[in-house]
Length: 471
Ligand code: MN
Ligand code: MN
Image (cartoon, rainbow, N blue to C red; front, side, top):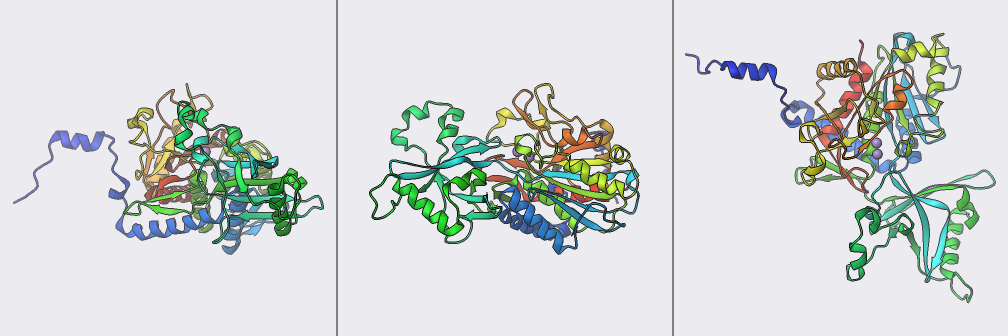
């Protein structure tokens, strides 16, 4: 006798008609769990290996070289299966695996960014006040200033000397290194400050980095603390105060990537936005065989400030790289672009039950529900959005389901609550069909952001599916 009852008509209809999502862990095959952990362990190394776009680009090139990628030079002959990269001024990287089909059939692109919000030093940063030495900063990207005080910070970047040499600076990341910090008021004297809004409580000009307090010995002159700091910098790096003018130095959070939670299901780190998608796009490309269509991974700079400049996604550097590939095959660039697909791989906001008032629950990305696809970003009436066509979203559903990717649809937050953008519109402007997709993040743009491991892994699988898509 049959134990199971026939499903009721309503249950049959429910199954057939309703869109119901399960938690990613209910959909993740058991055998993929170790792969997920292995992937996330490598991702954490990537995070610790690069805290600025320059470091991240250098780490990317090292990983690529280890996997047989070679630097591309204009005019170089290429064949199917060739693996190449082009580093743009040490701040952005484009990598490609040449496909078996012609470039007139288009390319499959995953584009992410490797710059993150931080505190850049001003051109004339060093000063002494009340026998304490500070560095003036100018914040980079959309950060909430109150979050950047009283945390340990590191100094990373380069100083370009007048004689043409470039000095690498990295202080705070190695065991035993000194670190830096920005002060805040004590609560005992914070009554007036506490009445201000979060946006006004700490101002941009208060984000001054504390860098020293010991005066130069046996000296009666002025600015002895500043002098002593400069003396240390001069001995270690051979620089003088004027050299700050041609430097790019940034204060970045000193945290290392760490598992979060008793169950270790999450990762906390600085710079998930957007290294979590950058690593997904990169890792998927590094292990690619010979794809049908040429696969291209773009790790761009300057997304956090509008994607402009020579190393941003608006730069012609990308067009030049792809047109160089096209020139070698006598394919018009425009033909290649109009047949291409781009996954704009960038993070989205994860629904946070501590702040339900800013999210629309039915259309928010949730941690552990997989890579979040955003048909559109923007703000207000979708202003500034690159609204992917229904056909493009349909295509993504098809290739992701086929590849076993756990994915979800995502809007950033409630209508008129705020908004954001990515590199998507700059790719779409090139006549490339583009869809936004990425990892949902808690505390986005904070010095310490949190993501789910499952979502990281599923974004990697999504990028792999994009590169391997044949239709
Ligand atoms: Mn981003
Ligand atoms: Mn961002």
